[in-house]
Image (cartoon, rainbow, N blue to C red; front, side):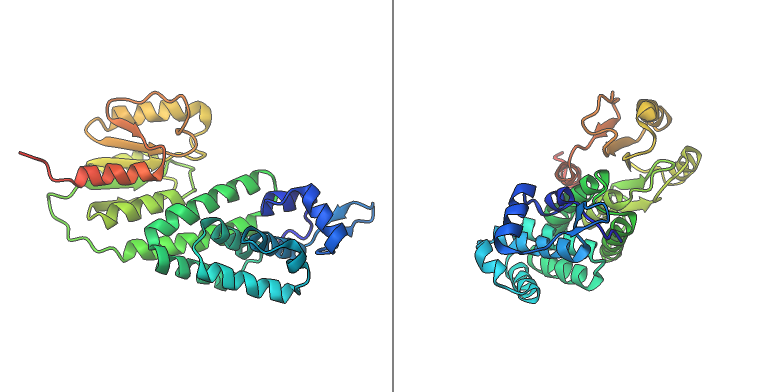
Length: 300
């Protein structure tokens, strides 16, 4: 676990400007930065968690002067009370960030169960988990979180998705659309594909889930057995940027009878040429719209 954070890390993680953090330190003594042997300021994990909690309370109308009079335990209790009685998305994302930094599974479970109860699983994923994952991606890029923290939280989210998918019962019949989902060879970022699987199964479609890092020859074999109506894949990091267009072209040519749905950082907003049987899904809400359109009864 990261033990040292710069004031820029605190700014990125809490949303509080570095200048404001310094003023609050000087005026209210809310946290006390440590110094390295070479006199460089840094903050530890407890400082970070405390600032995340302060940020959440401050965003909910608590004045910093009032927060400064509270102990860390009182601040934490107010945070728990605040996130328990409202469904402000940014507050829930902030609370998940604390759970991630602290590797706190019970806090994650509490946040998830509360929001699923209030919003439902689908809205919790769309309005809280997806923006949270975007935040994680940014924090990862600037080295404000480490692999253990990122793996910890994404694996917990993955577990929730697997359970949710398993809970969707479908009575397979020939009138249902058949979707085959997979990730390209070398691609391991599975959360979005799992959520797509949940959405597909929850709308009473047939689902063939092939998972991570699937070579093209294995995809071809699975396709020849099941003959799905749709192939769904998400290209986040693999294939690499220079090879994405060739991969999309190969998919289109290899599976001309299937409709191919593509998403992920490597295709969304990129200059990817699509074919007649390929479609880029730019946002999860458009996948939902697509699924519901396909399930609408056709007028004779």
